[in-house]
Structure formats: structure tokens, C-alpha cells
Length: 355
Image 1: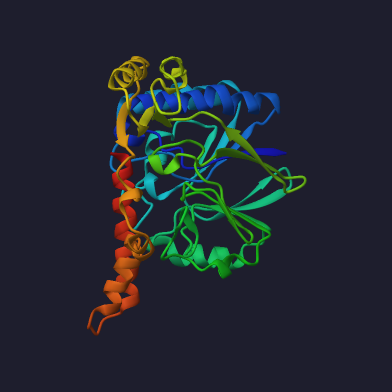
Image 2: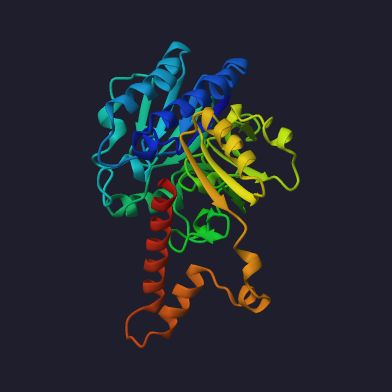
């Protein structure tokens, strides 16, 4: 049996931006369901964060998701096990009130996994664990330590896991807790990574500028071989173009194909601008494809203005925060304070990426 694996699809993402909903629809209609049709896959496991906002959802976003995902799934006779993620739950300390159970309950082909459980797929047992919060912490840890399966799937926050390139999660569960499993598949972090037997699958779609240049895949799990197949999503929602009229002629610049950038977020990075007239015409053509958002970034005045010593001495924000905490003369737990600050920085960075 082959099972399609989705995670972190975030219906209603970016404040219910409809261009994002249509982008998600393109992924389902052009990439995901055609693959399932071709390989006769009839079951999906979703590893959490089906919805984006914990408190509410826009009805238009709900209708868009129904049109592009729920209805095609029903038409094909596809069933789904949906694990709760942290974005799916109203409260942070309990999963009791959650969007999937309230909004998707009428669909007989969808089973909401609100508690740790073992499910059998064509003779192959898989452990499924929803978002771990204070209310279900003891139950979840006991399940992880004792489940009689070789494969575990969930929406885990593990200390040291790669949240995004160059940033590891400062808190969470211990990797060693999962050593007893052959394979652990998790949603939650949108960057794909593999650390030992733990595989963060990464999001299937681009939602913020942090996703730019980060290849996106959905996955297929084969219960006969325990093989995990990655299927790339080539669709882009974030694009960069580089303007340099010192290396490209007027004609070349005005013949750049911008068609793939329609309804996407675009950054135009100015490497060299010697001819304002050519630049204005270039921007007119870029604007004509109607990007969702277009930002112009002048790249001429950054690193070349710094001395070698300044570049060498430059420190990232997290290093500065850690050094500040270390310098404090307090009696409290500095490690805990450092962890809290890192968590706040991560949340602030995520919010900034949504702007």
C-alpha cells in the first residue's frame, strides 16, 4: 500500500490571501492529485497544521480549500487521517477545541487523530501522534516510549531540529526519545531535514520568503518496503529577479520572460542601474504580469561598504542575545531565559516573513 503524506498545508495562510489559496489549489490540481491518480493512491496521512490560524478562518479560504482539496479527494474515493498540529488548535495548552473536528466532522472519509494511536495500513502498523501540549504531554510521552511500531508519524517539536537553514530549535523533546523507531516522520518545521532516523518533511508549498530557494516536496510512504518517496513541487510563490544593465543589453532586459511571476511575490534586486530609462521600461513589464507584491532592493550599498574587520566581527542576532544573557548578573536560570528569547526571536522572524 502506498500512502501520500502531507503536512503544514496551512489553509488560510497569510491572512487568507486569495492568491495564496489559488497557489495551493494549483499544487493540488497540477501536482498532487495527478500523481495520486497515476499511482492509484487512495489514502493520505496529514501530519498537522491543516489550517493556518488558531482562532478563526475566513469562509472564502474554507471554500477555496474545499474546492481544490476536499472535493477532489471525495470524487476520487480517497480517505485521510489528519493529525492535529499546533495551528489547528484554539488553545496552546490543550487540543480539545480544534478546527479540523469542528469544520471537517461531516466528511466520513476524514479521520481526525486527536490522541496518540496506532493505525494499521494493509498489515503495517504506524504510530500517529498529534501536537504535544501540557494537556496530553504524559499520554504522548508514554505512547512514544512504548508504542509497538517501527514507524512513528506526528507533529513534533524536537530540540536541535533544523527549523530553517542556520537555525536549530532551542527547546522541545529529546532526539534520543525516538531512537527506538526505524523511521520518524514529522511536520511542524517547514524546512526539510534528516537527522538520524528523524525526518522533517518540510512544507509542500512556499508560504514566506524563508521558503525561497528551499525545494518543496510531498511524500509517499510504501508499507511494503518502508520506502519514502519524495515528489517535488516545482511551483513557486516567491521569485527574485536581478537587474544589471552593465551585463545585459537594453533589448535583453526588455525580453526577459516574467510570465511565471504572475500572482507571486517578487523581489527585483538592482545589481547595477546605469540607464534609468531601461530600468523604467523593465519595471513596467514586470508590473504588467500583476505580481501579488513587488519589492525593489538596491544591492549596491551593502557588503562593499564594510571593512574586512567589520565583516569578520559581525554577529548574528541569536549570538548577540546569548552573549547578553550570559553577561547578566542574575540568580535565575540563564539557560531558560536564553531559550525563551530564542523562541520569541523565532516567532518574530516568522511574523516578519508574513508581512
